[in-house]
Image (cartoon, rainbow, N blue to C red; front, side, top):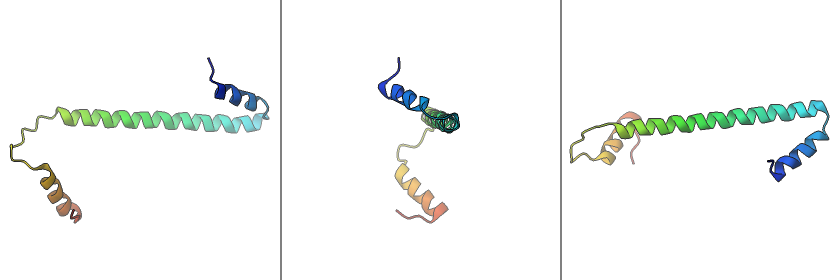
Length: 81
């Protein structure tokens, strides 16, 4: 079942000459590739986060993550918060 906007697009496309339709096909193919790439990136990020959460770091109870991050940023990039 097509949505109203899909039907409208088809009606408009049917009025175009073939050379203009080729441009629309190229645009649609590029958009589909971009959508697939974005999904792949999101999936990779989710998988990476899941791996991080699964790590058993066994940090000491007095470990202060915010202070460690601040110190590491200062040492590596000269960034002070």
